[in-house]
Length: 310
Ligand code: TA6
View 1 (tube, protein in one colour):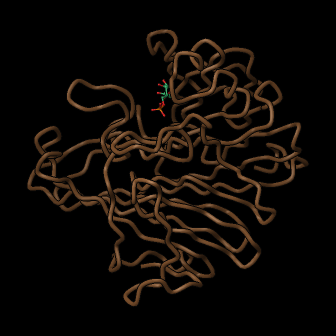
View 2 (tube, helix red, strand yellow):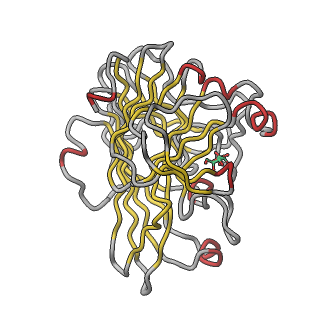
């Protein structure tokens, strides 16, 4: 179901555009001038703008929007696994599939729709997908934009199979920052993490905020549900609030890895940081008929906000 100002299709009130591959994008707006753009390619949020029209998510100037590869940037959905595994592409197939608009979703709590502009999307496995991942599921994604400009993503994965299955998951959120060397992440102090740069060995974070002087690629484990990403130069803070997502991925490729990625500018690492609400260390296990919900809300507040307010 979609709530939007502009009627485009008699069945649904949709404001939509199409990308140059002819794939539909849904535009959500609030009355203050904020907007969100969601592509049916991967159910990927590809833009989130504040009331001044400033883009809050990073997308690479060299990003390739060519099916089936996910565009680099925005918020790709990593499902049914985060990272590499033998039978599936990195970060799973969900972000490389064409999703459908779900015009009759099972209800969510009214707080998830009151005063919000939202769209409900649906992904079900094709016969081809089932060859690689033999588990029937229904993945419902609600993307919403609040009157306050906050972006909310709610994922509901239901096991519609006759046998249990497990999966890992991440909202792979590319946040736009002014200068990575002036960014601090608060809320992960003293947390344990797997370090992808050290064969995923387990370490413990020191007692102060995370700052960036080189590549960081970590999965913080059983983390607090509220994380702050402070952009010093722009005097603004991203506040991530999550439920059902115990882990947090923090990634910046820095210079060497940036140069090695064809769909990423050599210096673009300065303007982005990935901070992903995730469920990785302990995969989500669903019995037949069970459903998992993973919710992420991202707000942008003036940087006078600090971790004590979390
Ligand atoms: O931890 C984040 C990470 O797995 C990095 O190791 C890096 O491979 C990145 O994701 C790749 O993200 P992408 O958007 O290219 O799939």
